[in-house]
Length: 187
Image 1: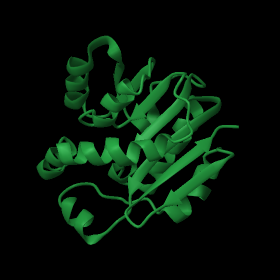
Image 2: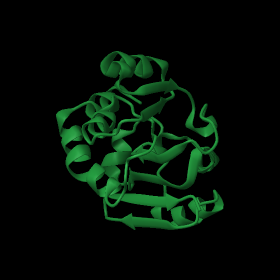
Image 3: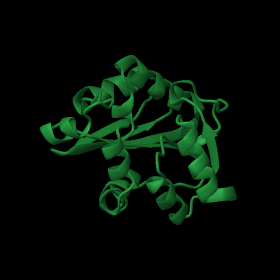
Image 4: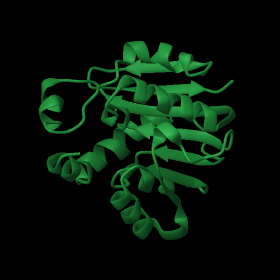
C-alpha cells in the first residue's frame, strides 16, 4: 500500500467506519464461537474489534512481515499472528469455523489470485464454516487513493459465481453503492 493508504487505514476515521458500520454488517447473524481466521489484517483495526467481540480463538494471516510483527507486539498472546499468503494458507484443512476478509481482496493484483484466496478459504473451513467479508466498490476517489498501489476491485455481481466455483454452497452477496458484503457457507 502507498503511504497515504497506510496512514488512512490506521486512522480513527477508518476505524470508525469499519468498526461502527462495516464489521457489524459483515458479522450480522454469524456466530464466532469456533476458530476464526482474519485475512489481511493490516494495522489490526478489525482484529481489535474481533477481540472486543469476544473471539477467543483468533488467528490473523498477514502477508507483510513488518505488519505481522507489529500485530504480534500489539496483541501478544491474545491472538495467533501468522505471516503468509492467503492464496497459499499455512493452515490445515478443515480447522477454521469462520474466515473474515474485510476490504482486502481489492489488494490482490489478479482475479486468479483472488480466486485462489476463495478456494483456500473453502479448504481451511470446517463443514458448515462461513467465509464472511466486505470490500469497496470502485469510484474515482478510491482509484485516486490507490495511485501507485494495487487496486483490483471485485465485481460484486460476479462474486456469487466465483464463490460457488470455489466450492461454496449457500452464498449471499449484498451491495450498496459504496461497498458490498458476502457470506458463503462450506456445505
